[in-house]
Length: 498
Image (cartoon, rainbow, N blue to C red; front, side, top):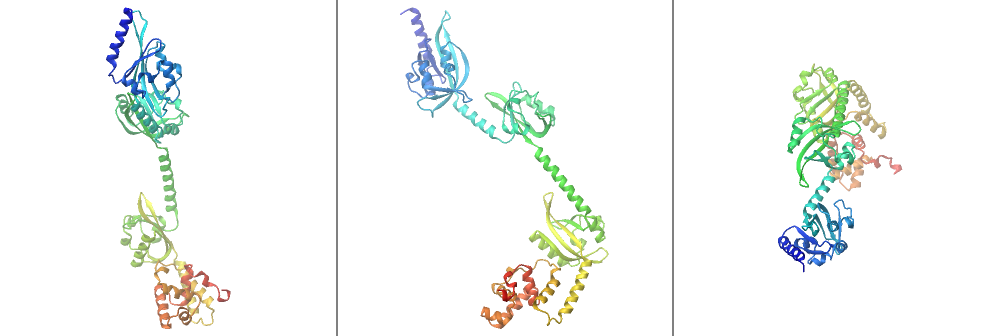
């Protein structure tokens, strides 16, 4: 054996002893591409136990392991790191995903360097592959990539070393209309996300220093020449061992449109409120303090705005009946709205007027309020009272009227006089409902007693209780009460048609 061969073998053994326990994986190849040796770390990174499992040479290695780049594209066989170094090529930091052909469920991510060790004459003596297992790092980076891409909040990442954008998510592209190619690799000087930002100089100083940029309003230039109002914030982070800045954004456009729509709605309401010829009052729901009134209210009731604004409705005392006021607000609190309730009001000069009050609950600056519409029906009421008086006079001797006509006259008397909610059908007992239903069929007390198998006195007591609860005084009024509420609809037909 020649001296040169002995020297080469000695150098290789010494090299092997040095690198055996390194955490980096090392594979030694002969210039003829034969795999000579690998340390334990290199074997573990390929999921094998023996050097022979790597393959006899570079060609056999390529058959046993498939390689992909991080963008999921397959690495051509000629570009495998082991083939590149076999050709005598030195390189650094090639990132590949290695999968075993025997078990494609097992994969590792290697960062690989290639070295060519030459002898004194400059001839290749040993070929070395040095690899670092970065599988955990790559997995974390992949999770970050997925999270970054899936995040609906618009975001871009800027590399601090050259202030160029290296990542952009779909949210930013959708918000601005830029394409990915119009952002990736572009300098912050060309696409300035801090343009027109509040305290712009301070924000850019923080960007250069790589520290947090707190939220602030800014204006983004759009590719179509327009601009968009946003809230921008910057958060420093490490990405691929490089200092970067993550910019996140909130699109202010929807909020701006909502504010404009709200302002326009408020303006329309204010105009309708002011110009309405019907008196309108707005008060707080919790303490009934007057928040606003329109001109029609002031002219109808004779007050000035200073006399009513900020005052409690009870203190103004323009309800003629205190109990009616209490019942009205109790009903409003319970139901949330009222429709055309007759209430007598008092002007400042003590003149009484009749009003049909409609009310609803509204939210003003997130506070529940009551809006009261007070329609003056004094003249209409006077006409109705005259009509009712005439009806009552006629009904004093109604013996010659038919039952149908009596009911119609009673209905005319009551239908135009809405009352505050009082008793409901569910307030009656089951037996009282039976009695009311038979009254609506036109049955007399004796007929009801026979139908329900009750004593006549018991039926009379039930009828009296029904009258009392419904606040009616006759069978016809009880029938009208039930018909107004849509009860016993099938009982309205004449018996001959049943």
